[in-house]
Length: 199
Image 1 (cartoon, rainbow, N blue to C red):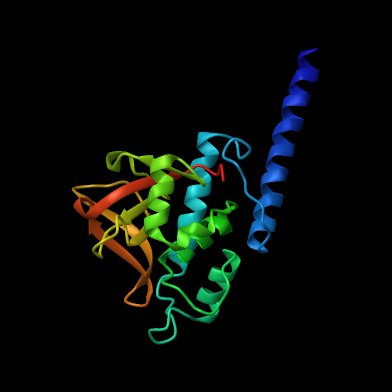
Image 2: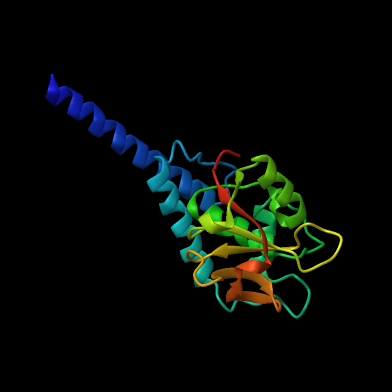
């Protein structure tokens, strides 16, 4: 009886890994699928997904838009894969974050193109985002900044680790028209959110 239980548990684990790999492959190919955190295997796998998102984001360091147009071959593709119609090309820090999670197997909302709207989603725990305390930030969490007036948030970044000494290392899109690895003071963060996958 124990042998059968072990075999069933083993088969379920194998099936779960196969489904996750299939969903990731479909997401990378531009499919419209979302992987929920519960399907992905709980907290440990959620951390693995966040890590994959950051590793991809870091690999894009230095990628630039064409001039000051918010367009470029990769950037335009990221915006289309969000479900947006081009033209016009849009400010793309959200498209960069969206693409990082898409590469990790999570399709987030196209509302991520607008930090201010996604701020509302994180507060409400909707569209795959859940607000967390700034002190709880981990690698792969999304941080919101406010660099413009009359909005609650105007820029996104992906945390590359935990805050330390009042600073946070980040991966960011559309910083001086390029992808950039930054280190910013946590005092400038207006909100932090964790990707839940429940889109």
